[in-house]
Image 1: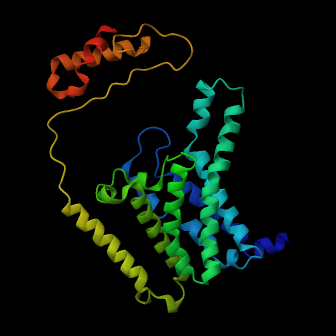
Image 2: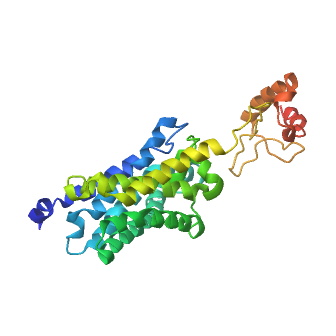
Length: 305
Protein backbone atom coordinates (compact mmCIF):
# COMPACT_ATOMS: atom_id res chain seq x y z
CA UNK A 1 0.00 0.00 0.00
CA UNK A 2 2.75 2.41 0.93
CA UNK A 3 4.71 1.42 -2.18
CA UNK A 4 1.68 2.06 -4.37
CA UNK A 5 1.21 5.46 -2.75
CA UNK A 6 4.70 6.56 -3.76
CA UNK A 7 4.65 4.77 -7.13
CA UNK A 8 1.49 6.52 -8.29
CA UNK A 9 2.81 9.86 -7.11
CA UNK A 10 -0.19 10.35 -4.84
CA UNK A 11 1.92 12.37 -2.43
CA UNK A 12 2.29 15.02 -5.13
CA UNK A 13 -1.47 15.54 -5.13
CA UNK A 14 -1.55 16.34 -1.42
CA UNK A 15 1.55 18.50 -1.73
CA UNK A 16 -0.15 20.44 -4.54
CA UNK A 17 -3.15 21.07 -2.27
CA UNK A 18 -0.87 22.43 0.46
CA UNK A 19 0.92 24.60 -2.11
CA UNK A 20 -2.36 26.05 -3.36
CA UNK A 21 -3.41 26.85 0.20
CA UNK A 22 -0.15 28.74 0.71
CA UNK A 23 -0.38 30.61 -2.58
CA UNK A 24 -3.96 31.64 -1.89
CA UNK A 25 -2.94 33.11 1.47
CA UNK A 26 -0.68 35.65 -0.22
CA UNK A 27 -3.31 37.74 -2.10
CA UNK A 28 -4.96 38.61 1.22
CA UNK A 29 -3.59 40.67 4.13
CA UNK A 30 -2.36 38.49 6.97
CA UNK A 31 -1.42 41.32 9.34
CA UNK A 32 -1.56 44.99 8.44
CA UNK A 33 -1.72 46.51 4.95
CA UNK A 34 -0.96 44.22 2.04
CA UNK A 35 1.46 45.21 -0.75
CA UNK A 36 -0.49 45.53 -4.00
CA UNK A 37 1.89 43.24 -5.90
CA UNK A 38 0.79 40.23 -3.85
CA UNK A 39 -2.60 40.25 -5.56
CA UNK A 40 -0.94 38.60 -8.55
CA UNK A 41 -0.89 35.26 -6.71
CA UNK A 42 -4.67 35.01 -7.10
CA UNK A 43 -4.18 34.56 -10.86
CA UNK A 44 -2.39 31.22 -10.42
CA UNK A 45 -2.88 30.19 -6.79
CA UNK A 46 -5.48 27.54 -7.71
CA UNK A 47 -3.36 26.00 -10.46
CA UNK A 48 -1.68 23.32 -8.26
CA UNK A 49 -5.06 22.26 -6.89
CA UNK A 50 -6.66 22.03 -10.35
CA UNK A 51 -3.67 20.08 -11.61
CA UNK A 52 -3.97 17.66 -8.69
CA UNK A 53 -7.70 17.14 -9.20
CA UNK A 54 -7.42 16.36 -12.92
CA UNK A 55 -4.07 14.59 -13.02
CA UNK A 56 -3.96 10.89 -13.95
CA UNK A 57 -2.87 10.01 -10.41
CA UNK A 58 -6.22 11.24 -9.13
CA UNK A 59 -8.49 10.20 -11.98
CA UNK A 60 -7.04 6.68 -12.18
CA UNK A 61 -7.25 6.01 -8.45
CA UNK A 62 -9.83 3.47 -7.20
CA UNK A 63 -12.06 6.23 -5.76
CA UNK A 64 -11.36 9.45 -7.69
CA UNK A 65 -14.40 11.30 -6.37
CA UNK A 66 -13.43 10.72 -2.76
CA UNK A 67 -9.81 11.57 -3.44
CA UNK A 68 -10.76 14.76 -5.30
CA UNK A 69 -12.98 15.85 -2.42
CA UNK A 70 -10.33 15.16 0.23
CA UNK A 71 -7.53 16.87 -1.71
CA UNK A 72 -9.56 20.05 -2.15
CA UNK A 73 -10.86 19.79 1.42
CA UNK A 74 -7.32 19.75 2.77
CA UNK A 75 -6.55 22.86 0.76
CA UNK A 76 -9.64 24.61 2.10
CA UNK A 77 -9.03 23.75 5.74
CA UNK A 78 -5.45 24.99 5.60
CA UNK A 79 -6.49 28.15 3.77
CA UNK A 80 -9.18 29.07 6.28
CA UNK A 81 -6.91 28.37 9.24
CA UNK A 82 -4.27 30.71 7.85
CA UNK A 83 -6.53 33.37 6.41
CA UNK A 84 -8.93 33.59 9.35
CA UNK A 85 -6.38 33.29 12.14
CA UNK A 86 -7.98 36.37 13.73
CA UNK A 87 -10.96 34.25 14.79
CA UNK A 88 -8.73 32.64 17.41
CA UNK A 89 -7.20 35.95 18.51
CA UNK A 90 -10.60 37.64 18.80
CA UNK A 91 -12.09 34.87 20.89
CA UNK A 92 -8.95 34.68 23.01
CA UNK A 93 -9.08 38.35 23.98
CA UNK A 94 -12.81 39.08 23.97
CA UNK A 95 -14.66 35.76 24.04
CA UNK A 96 -14.07 34.94 27.71
CA UNK A 97 -13.24 31.35 26.71
CA UNK A 98 -11.05 28.85 28.55
CA UNK A 99 -7.47 28.32 27.43
CA UNK A 100 -7.27 26.26 24.24
CA UNK A 101 -10.91 26.78 23.32
CA UNK A 102 -10.24 29.60 20.80
CA UNK A 103 -7.80 27.35 18.92
CA UNK A 104 -10.36 24.54 18.83
CA UNK A 105 -12.93 27.04 17.61
CA UNK A 106 -10.67 28.08 14.73
CA UNK A 107 -10.05 24.44 13.82
CA UNK A 108 -13.77 23.67 13.86
CA UNK A 109 -14.54 26.80 11.87
CA UNK A 110 -11.98 25.79 9.24
CA UNK A 111 -13.21 22.19 9.11
CA UNK A 112 -16.75 23.40 8.36
CA UNK A 113 -15.96 26.10 5.81
CA UNK A 114 -13.30 23.94 4.17
CA UNK A 115 -16.20 21.83 2.91
CA UNK A 116 -16.76 24.44 0.19
CA UNK A 117 -13.34 23.65 -1.21
CA UNK A 118 -14.15 19.96 -0.89
CA UNK A 119 -17.35 20.39 -2.90
CA UNK A 120 -15.37 22.30 -5.49
CA UNK A 121 -12.94 19.40 -5.89
CA UNK A 122 -15.79 16.91 -5.97
CA UNK A 123 -17.63 18.87 -8.66
CA UNK A 124 -14.59 19.25 -10.90
CA UNK A 125 -13.74 15.54 -10.71
CA UNK A 126 -17.40 14.60 -11.18
CA UNK A 127 -17.65 16.60 -14.42
CA UNK A 128 -14.41 15.01 -15.62
CA UNK A 129 -15.76 11.54 -14.87
CA UNK A 130 -19.18 12.21 -16.41
CA UNK A 131 -17.95 13.80 -19.63
CA UNK A 132 -14.51 12.25 -20.02
CA UNK A 133 -13.20 15.71 -20.93
CA UNK A 134 -10.63 17.55 -18.87
CA UNK A 135 -11.36 20.70 -20.85
CA UNK A 136 -15.01 20.68 -19.86
CA UNK A 137 -14.05 20.10 -16.25
CA UNK A 138 -11.73 23.12 -16.36
CA UNK A 139 -14.39 25.22 -18.09
CA UNK A 140 -16.84 24.26 -15.36
CA UNK A 141 -14.40 25.20 -12.56
CA UNK A 142 -15.03 29.00 -12.56
CA UNK A 143 -18.79 28.46 -12.65
CA UNK A 144 -18.70 26.10 -9.69
CA UNK A 145 -16.28 28.26 -7.71
CA UNK A 146 -18.46 31.35 -8.14
CA UNK A 147 -21.58 29.43 -7.12
CA UNK A 148 -19.85 28.15 -3.98
CA UNK A 149 -18.69 31.65 -3.04
CA UNK A 150 -22.29 32.81 -3.33
CA UNK A 151 -23.41 29.87 -1.18
CA UNK A 152 -20.80 30.72 1.45
CA UNK A 153 -22.13 34.28 1.59
CA UNK A 154 -25.83 33.39 1.64
CA UNK A 155 -26.01 29.96 3.31
CA UNK A 156 -23.34 30.10 6.01
CA UNK A 157 -23.18 33.93 6.00
CA UNK A 158 -19.39 34.04 5.60
CA UNK A 159 -18.63 36.35 2.66
CA UNK A 160 -15.08 37.09 3.83
CA UNK A 161 -12.08 36.99 1.54
CA UNK A 162 -13.78 35.89 -1.63
CA UNK A 163 -11.17 35.50 -4.31
CA UNK A 164 -12.30 38.60 -6.19
CA UNK A 165 -11.52 40.81 -3.20
CA UNK A 166 -7.83 40.15 -3.78
CA UNK A 167 -7.95 42.53 -6.77
CA UNK A 168 -9.20 45.54 -4.82
CA UNK A 169 -6.10 47.52 -5.87
CA UNK A 170 -6.27 46.42 -9.52
CA UNK A 171 -8.12 49.33 -11.10
CA UNK A 172 -8.57 47.65 -14.48
CA UNK A 173 -10.05 44.44 -13.10
CA UNK A 174 -12.27 46.12 -10.53
CA UNK A 175 -14.12 47.85 -13.38
CA UNK A 176 -15.86 44.52 -13.86
CA UNK A 177 -17.45 44.80 -10.42
CA UNK A 178 -19.75 47.55 -11.71
CA UNK A 179 -21.74 44.89 -13.59
CA UNK A 180 -20.82 41.55 -12.01
CA UNK A 181 -19.77 42.41 -8.47
CA UNK A 182 -17.02 40.55 -6.70
CA UNK A 183 -18.35 37.27 -8.09
CA UNK A 184 -17.53 38.32 -11.63
CA UNK A 185 -13.94 39.02 -10.62
CA UNK A 186 -13.73 35.64 -8.87
CA UNK A 187 -15.01 34.00 -12.04
CA UNK A 188 -12.34 35.74 -14.09
CA UNK A 189 -9.55 34.71 -11.71
CA UNK A 190 -10.57 31.05 -11.61
CA UNK A 191 -10.95 31.00 -15.40
CA UNK A 192 -7.37 32.20 -15.74
CA UNK A 193 -6.21 29.59 -13.22
CA UNK A 194 -7.99 26.94 -15.29
CA UNK A 195 -6.29 28.17 -18.43
CA UNK A 196 -2.84 27.84 -16.84
CA UNK A 197 -3.73 24.43 -15.40
CA UNK A 198 -4.81 23.24 -18.83
CA UNK A 199 -1.41 24.16 -20.18
CA UNK A 200 0.29 22.18 -17.40
CA UNK A 201 -1.89 19.14 -18.03
CA UNK A 202 -1.53 19.09 -21.81
CA UNK A 203 1.51 21.23 -22.53
CA UNK A 204 3.74 18.28 -23.45
CA UNK A 205 1.23 16.70 -25.81
CA UNK A 206 1.73 17.86 -29.44
CA UNK A 207 -1.96 17.24 -30.12
CA UNK A 208 -2.81 20.00 -27.67
CA UNK A 209 -0.53 22.71 -29.00
CA UNK A 210 -1.64 26.26 -28.31
CA UNK A 211 -2.83 26.73 -31.89
CA UNK A 212 -5.21 23.77 -31.41
CA UNK A 213 -6.93 25.28 -28.38
CA UNK A 214 -9.56 27.55 -29.97
CA UNK A 215 -11.89 27.66 -26.99
CA UNK A 216 -9.23 28.85 -24.59
CA UNK A 217 -7.91 31.33 -27.15
CA UNK A 218 -11.38 32.84 -27.47
CA UNK A 219 -11.77 32.96 -23.69
CA UNK A 220 -8.43 34.65 -23.21
CA UNK A 221 -9.10 37.14 -26.02
CA UNK A 222 -12.53 38.03 -24.62
CA UNK A 223 -11.08 38.41 -21.11
CA UNK A 224 -8.22 40.66 -22.11
CA UNK A 225 -10.40 42.62 -24.51
CA UNK A 226 -13.11 43.16 -21.88
CA UNK A 227 -10.62 44.45 -19.33
CA UNK A 228 -9.11 46.82 -21.88
CA UNK A 229 -12.47 48.16 -23.07
CA UNK A 230 -13.77 48.64 -19.53
CA UNK A 231 -10.66 50.46 -18.41
CA UNK A 232 -11.15 53.07 -21.16
CA UNK A 233 -14.94 53.12 -21.53
CA UNK A 234 -15.80 53.91 -17.94
CA UNK A 235 -15.41 57.49 -16.70
CA UNK A 236 -12.29 58.06 -14.70
CA UNK A 237 -12.54 59.20 -11.09
CA UNK A 238 -12.21 62.97 -10.81
CA UNK A 239 -9.39 64.50 -8.82
CA UNK A 240 -10.32 64.73 -5.13
CA UNK A 241 -11.25 68.16 -3.82
CA UNK A 242 -11.61 67.23 -0.15
CA UNK A 243 -10.47 64.61 2.32
CA UNK A 244 -13.06 62.61 4.26
CA UNK A 245 -12.08 61.09 7.59
CA UNK A 246 -14.13 58.47 9.40
CA UNK A 247 -13.67 58.53 13.18
CA UNK A 248 -14.14 55.32 15.11
CA UNK A 249 -13.31 55.61 18.80
CA UNK A 250 -11.48 52.85 20.61
CA UNK A 251 -14.57 51.23 22.07
CA UNK A 252 -14.21 48.69 24.85
CA UNK A 253 -16.39 45.65 24.19
CA UNK A 254 -15.84 44.30 27.70
CA UNK A 255 -18.40 44.49 30.52
CA UNK A 256 -16.60 47.26 32.44
CA UNK A 257 -17.63 50.92 31.86
CA UNK A 258 -14.89 53.02 30.32
CA UNK A 259 -15.67 56.65 30.97
CA UNK A 260 -18.64 58.78 30.21
CA UNK A 261 -20.57 58.78 26.98
CA UNK A 262 -20.78 62.09 25.13
CA UNK A 263 -23.96 63.60 23.75
CA UNK A 264 -23.94 61.33 20.71
CA UNK A 265 -24.16 58.24 22.91
CA UNK A 266 -20.75 56.74 21.99
CA UNK A 267 -18.75 55.47 24.95
CA UNK A 268 -15.24 56.85 24.68
CA UNK A 269 -12.38 54.93 26.26
CA UNK A 270 -9.69 56.99 28.01
CA UNK A 271 -7.06 55.97 25.46
CA UNK A 272 -9.16 57.53 22.70
CA UNK A 273 -9.55 61.00 24.23
CA UNK A 274 -6.18 62.36 23.10
CA UNK A 275 -6.59 60.97 19.61
CA UNK A 276 -10.03 62.47 19.24
CA UNK A 277 -8.86 65.83 20.55
CA UNK A 278 -5.99 65.90 18.05
CA UNK A 279 -8.35 65.18 15.19
CA UNK A 280 -10.74 67.85 16.42
CA UNK A 281 -7.87 70.33 16.34
CA UNK A 282 -7.10 69.32 12.76
CA UNK A 283 -10.70 70.04 11.90
CA UNK A 284 -10.55 73.50 13.44
CA UNK A 285 -7.42 74.37 11.46
CA UNK A 286 -8.76 73.15 8.10
CA UNK A 287 -12.50 72.38 8.19
CA UNK A 288 -12.74 72.22 4.39
CA UNK A 289 -10.87 68.92 4.39
CA UNK A 290 -13.42 67.22 6.59
CA UNK A 291 -16.55 65.48 5.47
CA UNK A 292 -19.67 67.53 6.16
CA UNK A 293 -21.33 64.41 7.52
CA UNK A 294 -18.93 64.37 10.50
CA UNK A 295 -19.08 68.06 11.45
CA UNK A 296 -22.06 67.69 13.74
CA UNK A 297 -20.23 65.05 15.78
CA UNK A 298 -16.96 66.90 16.23
CA UNK A 299 -18.07 69.27 19.04
CA UNK A 300 -19.16 66.30 21.15
CA UNK A 301 -16.02 64.37 20.34
CA UNK A 302 -13.74 67.27 21.19
CA UNK A 303 -15.65 67.75 24.46
CA UNK A 304 -14.81 64.16 25.40
CA UNK A 305 -11.19 65.14 25.95
